[in-house]
Length: 293
Image (cartoon, rainbow, N blue to C red; front, side, top):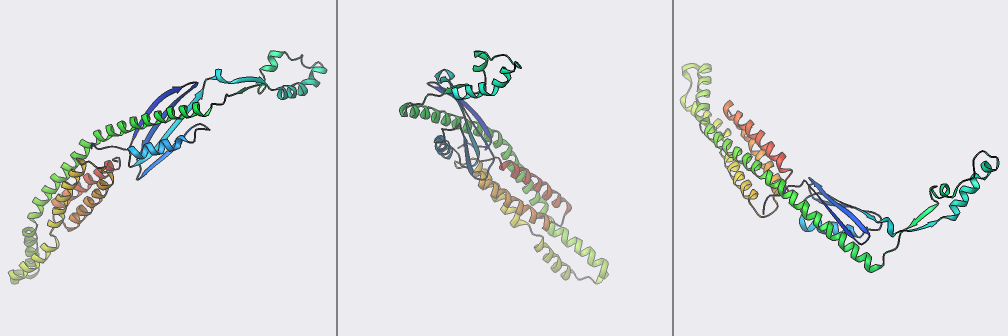
Protein backbone atom coordinates (compact mmCIF):
# COMPACT_ATOMS: atom_id res chain seq x y z
CA UNK A 1 0.00 0.00 0.00
CA UNK A 2 1.30 3.45 -0.88
CA UNK A 3 2.21 5.78 1.97
CA UNK A 4 -0.68 8.05 2.98
CA UNK A 5 -0.55 11.49 4.50
CA UNK A 6 -3.16 12.93 6.87
CA UNK A 7 -3.87 16.30 5.27
CA UNK A 8 -6.34 16.71 2.42
CA UNK A 9 -9.53 18.25 1.09
CA UNK A 10 -12.36 17.17 -1.24
CA UNK A 11 -15.67 18.69 -2.33
CA UNK A 12 -18.67 17.03 -3.98
CA UNK A 13 -21.94 18.63 -5.10
CA UNK A 14 -25.25 16.83 -5.56
CA UNK A 15 -28.96 17.31 -6.13
CA UNK A 16 -32.14 15.30 -5.69
CA UNK A 17 -35.65 16.55 -6.32
CA UNK A 18 -36.01 20.06 -4.93
CA UNK A 19 -32.80 19.79 -2.88
CA UNK A 20 -29.23 20.66 -3.79
CA UNK A 21 -26.17 20.33 -1.58
CA UNK A 22 -22.39 20.39 -1.29
CA UNK A 23 -20.23 18.12 0.86
CA UNK A 24 -16.74 19.19 1.94
CA UNK A 25 -14.40 16.70 3.61
CA UNK A 26 -11.09 17.81 5.04
CA UNK A 27 -8.51 16.34 7.42
CA UNK A 28 -5.43 17.35 9.37
CA UNK A 29 -2.89 15.46 11.47
CA UNK A 30 -4.09 13.54 14.51
CA UNK A 31 -2.83 10.78 16.75
CA UNK A 32 -6.12 8.88 16.37
CA UNK A 33 -9.11 8.99 14.04
CA UNK A 34 -11.61 11.70 15.00
CA UNK A 35 -14.57 12.52 12.74
CA UNK A 36 -16.90 15.51 13.09
CA UNK A 37 -20.04 15.97 11.01
CA UNK A 38 -21.74 19.32 10.47
CA UNK A 39 -25.05 19.50 8.62
CA UNK A 40 -28.30 21.47 8.52
CA UNK A 41 -31.04 20.81 11.10
CA UNK A 42 -33.00 17.67 10.36
CA UNK A 43 -30.13 15.74 8.77
CA UNK A 44 -28.43 14.50 11.96
CA UNK A 45 -28.83 10.87 10.83
CA UNK A 46 -26.12 11.45 8.20
CA UNK A 47 -23.59 11.72 11.02
CA UNK A 48 -23.44 7.90 11.04
CA UNK A 49 -22.72 7.79 7.29
CA UNK A 50 -19.83 10.22 7.77
CA UNK A 51 -18.33 8.35 10.74
CA UNK A 52 -18.70 4.87 9.26
CA UNK A 53 -17.31 6.06 5.92
CA UNK A 54 -14.29 7.65 7.59
CA UNK A 55 -13.61 4.56 9.70
CA UNK A 56 -13.70 2.35 6.61
CA UNK A 57 -11.11 4.47 4.79
CA UNK A 58 -8.77 5.99 7.39
CA UNK A 59 -6.93 5.04 10.56
CA UNK A 60 -5.65 8.41 11.79
CA UNK A 61 -6.37 12.10 11.42
CA UNK A 62 -8.89 14.73 12.48
CA UNK A 63 -11.66 14.74 9.87
CA UNK A 64 -14.44 17.25 9.33
CA UNK A 65 -17.36 16.46 7.01
CA UNK A 66 -19.51 19.53 6.28
CA UNK A 67 -22.88 19.24 4.51
CA UNK A 68 -24.57 22.41 3.21
CA UNK A 69 -28.04 21.88 1.74
CA UNK A 70 -30.85 24.08 0.46
CA UNK A 71 -34.29 23.54 -0.95
CA UNK A 72 -35.65 25.36 -4.00
CA UNK A 73 -37.88 28.25 -2.89
CA UNK A 74 -40.59 27.31 -5.39
CA UNK A 75 -41.51 24.31 -3.28
CA UNK A 76 -42.51 26.43 -0.30
CA UNK A 77 -46.11 27.54 0.44
CA UNK A 78 -46.56 31.31 1.03
CA UNK A 79 -49.26 32.76 3.27
CA UNK A 80 -50.04 36.07 4.94
CA UNK A 81 -49.62 36.20 8.69
CA UNK A 82 -52.76 38.09 9.66
CA UNK A 83 -51.62 38.34 13.27
CA UNK A 84 -48.35 40.01 12.30
CA UNK A 85 -50.12 42.34 9.84
CA UNK A 86 -52.64 43.46 12.47
CA UNK A 87 -49.80 44.09 14.92
CA UNK A 88 -48.14 46.45 12.43
CA UNK A 89 -51.48 48.24 11.72
CA UNK A 90 -52.25 48.68 15.44
CA UNK A 91 -48.75 50.03 16.12
CA UNK A 92 -49.01 52.58 13.27
CA UNK A 93 -52.66 53.63 13.80
CA UNK A 94 -51.92 56.58 16.19
CA UNK A 95 -49.43 58.07 13.72
CA UNK A 96 -51.89 57.72 10.82
CA UNK A 97 -54.68 59.32 12.90
CA UNK A 98 -52.61 62.41 13.71
CA UNK A 99 -51.45 62.77 10.11
CA UNK A 100 -47.80 62.16 10.97
CA UNK A 101 -47.63 59.39 8.36
CA UNK A 102 -49.71 58.46 5.33
CA UNK A 103 -51.97 55.47 5.25
CA UNK A 104 -49.89 52.36 4.48
CA UNK A 105 -50.25 50.76 1.08
CA UNK A 106 -50.89 47.08 0.61
CA UNK A 107 -47.54 46.41 -1.11
CA UNK A 108 -45.76 48.28 1.67
CA UNK A 109 -47.47 46.20 4.33
CA UNK A 110 -46.72 42.93 2.55
CA UNK A 111 -43.03 43.89 2.35
CA UNK A 112 -42.75 44.18 6.14
CA UNK A 113 -40.77 41.47 7.83
CA UNK A 114 -42.83 38.50 8.96
CA UNK A 115 -46.02 39.43 7.12
CA UNK A 116 -45.38 36.86 4.36
CA UNK A 117 -44.60 33.43 5.76
CA UNK A 118 -43.06 30.68 3.66
CA UNK A 119 -43.89 27.21 4.93
CA UNK A 120 -41.78 24.42 3.52
CA UNK A 121 -43.54 21.36 2.21
CA UNK A 122 -42.96 18.24 4.24
CA UNK A 123 -41.29 15.33 2.43
CA UNK A 124 -42.98 11.96 2.77
CA UNK A 125 -40.94 9.14 4.29
CA UNK A 126 -40.05 7.57 0.95
CA UNK A 127 -38.90 10.86 -0.57
CA UNK A 128 -36.93 11.67 2.58
CA UNK A 129 -35.21 8.28 2.57
CA UNK A 130 -34.19 8.69 -1.09
CA UNK A 131 -32.88 12.19 -0.36
CA UNK A 132 -30.75 11.05 2.59
CA UNK A 133 -29.44 8.09 0.56
CA UNK A 134 -28.33 10.49 -2.20
CA UNK A 135 -26.64 12.75 0.36
CA UNK A 136 -24.92 9.77 1.97
CA UNK A 137 -23.59 8.78 -1.46
CA UNK A 138 -22.13 12.28 -1.85
CA UNK A 139 -20.50 11.97 1.57
CA UNK A 140 -18.91 8.68 0.45
CA UNK A 141 -17.66 10.34 -2.75
CA UNK A 142 -16.17 13.22 -0.76
CA UNK A 143 -14.38 10.78 1.55
CA UNK A 144 -13.05 8.91 -1.49
CA UNK A 145 -11.73 12.20 -2.83
CA UNK A 146 -10.17 12.96 0.54
CA UNK A 147 -8.43 9.59 0.50
CA UNK A 148 -6.98 10.38 -2.95
CA UNK A 149 -5.72 13.73 -1.66
CA UNK A 150 -4.07 12.07 1.35
CA UNK A 151 -2.42 9.47 -0.89
CA UNK A 152 -1.05 12.30 -3.04
CA UNK A 153 0.45 13.86 0.07
CA UNK A 154 1.93 10.47 0.99
CA UNK A 155 3.44 10.17 -2.50
CA UNK A 156 5.12 13.56 -2.00
CA UNK A 157 6.40 12.55 1.46
CA UNK A 158 7.83 9.18 0.39
CA UNK A 159 10.97 10.44 -1.43
CA UNK A 160 11.60 12.95 1.37
CA UNK A 161 11.49 10.26 4.05
CA UNK A 162 13.56 7.83 1.96
CA UNK A 163 16.17 10.53 1.43
CA UNK A 164 16.37 11.20 5.17
CA UNK A 165 16.75 7.49 5.91
CA UNK A 166 19.56 7.35 3.31
CA UNK A 167 21.27 10.26 5.08
CA UNK A 168 20.93 8.53 8.45
CA UNK A 169 22.51 5.41 6.96
CA UNK A 170 25.39 7.40 5.44
CA UNK A 171 26.08 9.23 8.70
CA UNK A 172 25.94 5.94 10.61
CA UNK A 173 28.58 4.50 8.27
CA UNK A 174 30.75 7.59 8.74
CA UNK A 175 30.36 7.37 12.51
CA UNK A 176 31.47 3.73 12.38
CA UNK A 177 34.62 4.69 10.47
CA UNK A 178 35.47 7.44 12.95
CA UNK A 179 34.68 5.28 15.99
CA UNK A 180 37.06 2.55 14.77
CA UNK A 181 39.98 4.85 15.48
CA UNK A 182 38.85 5.81 18.98
CA UNK A 183 40.75 3.10 20.97
CA UNK A 184 44.13 3.98 19.45
CA UNK A 185 43.54 7.71 19.86
CA UNK A 186 42.41 7.26 23.46
CA UNK A 187 45.51 5.16 24.22
CA UNK A 188 47.81 7.76 22.66
CA UNK A 189 46.05 10.58 24.48
CA UNK A 190 46.26 8.80 27.82
CA UNK A 191 49.91 7.86 27.27
CA UNK A 192 50.86 11.48 26.63
CA UNK A 193 49.00 12.59 29.74
CA UNK A 194 50.69 9.93 31.90
CA UNK A 195 54.09 10.85 30.51
CA UNK A 196 53.46 14.49 31.33
CA UNK A 197 52.58 13.56 34.89
CA UNK A 198 55.05 10.72 35.62
CA UNK A 199 57.75 11.17 33.04
CA UNK A 200 59.70 8.09 31.96
CA UNK A 201 58.41 6.09 34.93
CA UNK A 202 54.99 5.76 33.34
CA UNK A 203 54.21 2.06 33.01
CA UNK A 204 53.27 0.80 29.55
CA UNK A 205 51.14 -1.87 31.15
CA UNK A 206 49.27 0.71 33.20
CA UNK A 207 48.76 2.84 30.11
CA UNK A 208 47.34 -0.13 28.19
CA UNK A 209 44.98 -1.09 31.03
CA UNK A 210 43.63 2.40 31.53
CA UNK A 211 43.29 3.02 27.80
CA UNK A 212 41.40 -0.27 27.43
CA UNK A 213 38.98 0.73 30.19
CA UNK A 214 38.40 4.08 28.51
CA UNK A 215 37.88 2.39 25.15
CA UNK A 216 35.21 0.12 26.65
CA UNK A 217 33.32 3.14 27.99
CA UNK A 218 33.59 4.85 24.61
CA UNK A 219 32.60 1.78 22.58
CA UNK A 220 29.68 2.74 20.32
CA UNK A 221 29.40 -0.47 18.31
CA UNK A 222 26.07 -1.44 19.92
CA UNK A 223 24.58 1.97 19.13
CA UNK A 224 25.80 1.78 15.53
CA UNK A 225 24.43 -1.74 15.13
CA UNK A 226 21.04 -0.63 16.42
CA UNK A 227 21.05 2.38 14.10
CA UNK A 228 21.71 0.06 11.16
CA UNK A 229 18.82 -2.13 12.27
CA UNK A 230 16.51 0.88 12.61
CA UNK A 231 17.41 1.98 9.07
CA UNK A 232 16.32 -1.43 7.76
CA UNK A 233 13.14 -1.21 9.84
CA UNK A 234 12.30 2.25 8.48
CA UNK A 235 12.72 1.10 4.89
CA UNK A 236 10.47 -1.89 5.51
CA UNK A 237 7.77 0.37 6.96
CA UNK A 238 8.01 2.84 4.07
CA UNK A 239 7.40 0.06 1.55
CA UNK A 240 5.01 -2.05 3.64
CA UNK A 241 1.29 -2.64 3.24
CA UNK A 242 0.08 -1.37 6.62
CA UNK A 243 -0.31 2.21 7.84
CA UNK A 244 3.13 3.13 9.13
CA UNK A 245 2.73 6.49 10.87
CA UNK A 246 2.69 5.35 14.50
CA UNK A 247 5.55 2.88 14.05
CA UNK A 248 7.66 5.39 12.14
CA UNK A 249 7.10 7.86 14.96
CA UNK A 250 8.27 5.27 17.50
CA UNK A 251 11.25 4.43 15.30
CA UNK A 252 12.27 8.09 15.14
CA UNK A 253 12.41 8.09 18.95
CA UNK A 254 14.66 5.03 18.89
CA UNK A 255 16.88 6.70 16.27
CA UNK A 256 17.26 9.71 18.55
CA UNK A 257 17.97 7.56 21.62
CA UNK A 258 20.91 5.84 19.89
CA UNK A 259 22.30 9.07 18.45
CA UNK A 260 22.19 10.72 21.88
CA UNK A 261 24.15 7.82 23.38
CA UNK A 262 26.60 7.97 20.48
CA UNK A 263 27.31 11.65 21.19
CA UNK A 264 27.65 11.08 24.93
CA UNK A 265 30.22 8.29 24.36
CA UNK A 266 32.17 10.14 21.71
CA UNK A 267 35.76 11.02 22.60
CA UNK A 268 36.49 12.63 19.22
CA UNK A 269 35.29 16.00 17.97
CA UNK A 270 34.85 14.53 14.49
CA UNK A 271 32.60 11.75 15.82
CA UNK A 272 30.64 14.25 17.88
CA UNK A 273 30.12 16.40 14.77
CA UNK A 274 28.72 13.39 12.90
CA UNK A 275 26.50 12.58 15.87
CA UNK A 276 25.09 16.10 15.93
CA UNK A 277 24.40 16.02 12.20
CA UNK A 278 22.74 12.64 12.71
CA UNK A 279 20.48 14.09 15.42
CA UNK A 280 19.50 17.01 13.17
CA UNK A 281 18.53 14.63 10.36
CA UNK A 282 16.57 12.40 12.73
CA UNK A 283 14.66 15.43 14.02
CA UNK A 284 13.75 16.37 10.44
CA UNK A 285 12.64 12.78 9.87
CA UNK A 286 10.50 12.86 13.03
CA UNK A 287 8.79 16.09 11.94
CA UNK A 288 7.88 14.65 8.54
CA UNK A 289 6.65 11.40 10.08
CA UNK A 290 3.99 13.41 11.97
CA UNK A 291 2.24 13.83 8.60
CA UNK A 292 2.07 10.08 7.87
CA UNK A 293 -1.11 8.12 8.57
